[in-house]
Length: 87
Image (cartoon, rainbow, N blue to C red; front, side, top):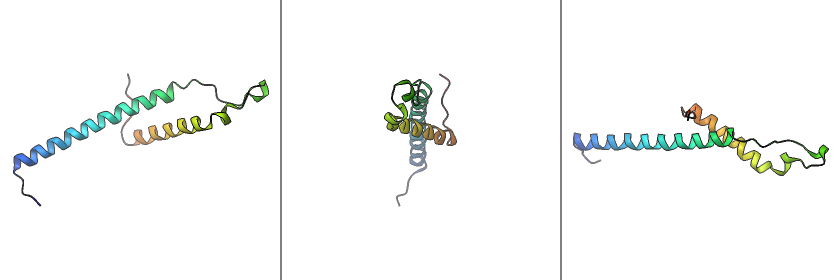
């Protein structure tokens, strides 16, 4: 293991903290975008076959699965301390 001077160690720690702050900023931006995606979903889901339509849930199952996964990711992010910003 290399020997580092106190200044080098300080610089390494400062870079580490800067990197963590940038990571947190990016994570927060992603959480905000994902939250918007989930909250702005205004599509009417359900079975419209009785009205002569189709079963929206079946036709859009992959999209619904993605939305549900997005909600799970938001829950995990919240548990890690990343909640949507009030913007």
